[in-house]
Image (tube, rainbow, N blue to C red; front, top):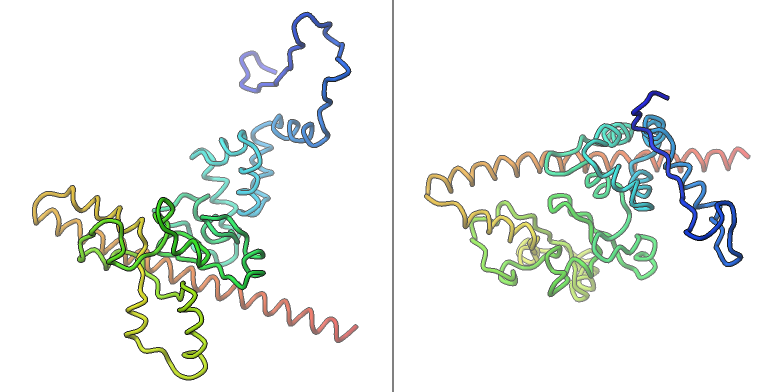
Length: 277
């Protein structure tokens, strides 16, 4: 190896006042899992990168959550090429939008847990709960977290009059909104309209809630702008950003439809195989 190589190996120094190769009886032995973990970290960087590129985006996220060293590397901008590679391997997945990093995009579209309480979809289904993906708001929440109050309400959705700050009404066109039935009464009332008749549009509008975080962020930005001309320019730019976001959201919805179609095809193939057997 050439002198001055950046390749580093960790060496554990023995405790002071103790022979180099001795070990006290009470000293814990490193587990096999720890040893394997250390061996993986000590691999050359180029080999690690090639291994990472073989993983799915969700596997890569979970790996980043297992150790601080992995997180520090995988969440760094220098690892963008790895994320771009694994995301491009997902069939029909639209490219990452400009307002999200690749890990954020993978977490938004491919994770199956609430982004607030972190409950997985499997647990939510046991309680007859659902997981709601709010693509425009860049979050995924269960019903309970969608309506949270106090310190956690920043991620949630509120009616315009219930926002923690009085936000300029003209900003409503840029704030993600939802008409999902979130309260217990709304959910129970859905059975009637589903079975009997179509729900009036007026009832949906009354139920509309807006994403708190986006509303407050836009309002804070808007207040800092001075002059009518500058504000008009800002509004026009926000409209362009919203159009681009909506276009990407539509592409994501097409992706989910194709995923469902492929799953149905696989299930049909399995049924046919069982019949043949």
